[in-house]
Image (tube, rainbow, N blue to C red):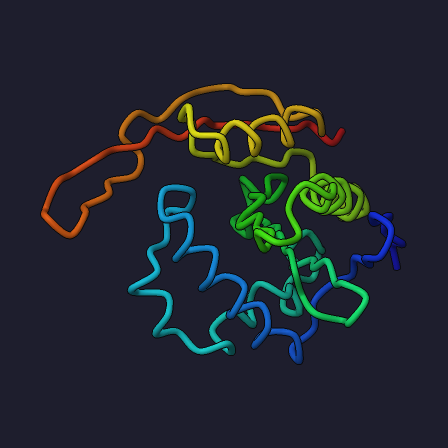
Length: 189
């Protein structure tokens, strides 16, 4: 098992089935607070049960490279999480997707996002045959988007493209806004 570094007062570990309720609560909150940061929407996802995330734990992934990691505070509360999902199709099994990096607002600015991304990379490096981590991140001038881009860039991810109008947001009055997604990758080998 890989040991993960975490900021003082926190610990990082892989999530287990018993953690899925806390994971869902964290995810629902992130989707509600930051609708432009995720391709999933709060209204749909809030109806899912915690068990629907069981596949993200990677127990059916024989090669490794699919998992959820969480950061826990001193009271053992899940306050941040990130996931990695490995492609299972034969021709692209060497690729994984970093998904759903989220930190509760009251725990922001303490290095948890960076610690989780580094732990994710370390775990990915131990998965046989995994060569590449990819991700998409909202590319806007908003502070949260810029912070997320910097976290990934500091971890060694490089931009390789931009998907314009990747997210379509409709507000209560029917006004439509779009957000672009930066495509990023990190070579493991």
